Amino acid sequence: MIFFYRGQTPESSERNFLQKAQMLETYGVDPHPCKDVSGNPAFLAFTPFGFVVLQGNKRVHFLKWNEVTKLKFEGKSFHIYANQKEDKKIILTYFAPTPEACKHLWKCGVENQAFFKLEKSSQVRTVSSSNLFFKGSRFRYSGRVAKEVMEQSAKIKRDPPEIHRSGLVPSRSCPSITYGPRLSSVPRTRRRAVHISIMEENPCVK
Image (cartoon, rainbow, N blue to C red):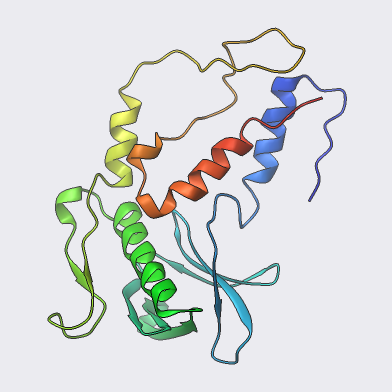
């Protein structure tokens, strides 16, 4: 999708570009390539709101983090267990390219669910990839959760970042852009997606 903002100031065009871009379902999302049970290509992704399955340009599944009850993997198989409205239980199964990719996908899911769902880091628990805790892989997210990061970030007083534009006088005021937490405050598996979205916040305006 291409946006045209001719005749606008750099500040206005950046603000309008970001307002459009953030409405896209894949904005800030780091997709993981997989296949469904029929062998069709799909992308699994984790967002601040929940778990997403994309096929082509369409979102075919969306599960809120409070609906996801367990994430599990066995070899190349990745399973998502969830409870939706009226106690409707569902299980989604997808297949990663390799066992290593599937394990990485599972860790990303566990980490993102803990980061975005929990109220406090003290609520984090060690999870197992198997129904039996003493079998399979175990993982525990370490660090602050999203709510703690946002609360602590709101207390920090800082000057607006300096923005350099080609052929323009540098400006230290750009109140329309909201900058997120530092990468050190974001789960390791989400830093790549966050880095991409930060880079997109400063498009080259000609």
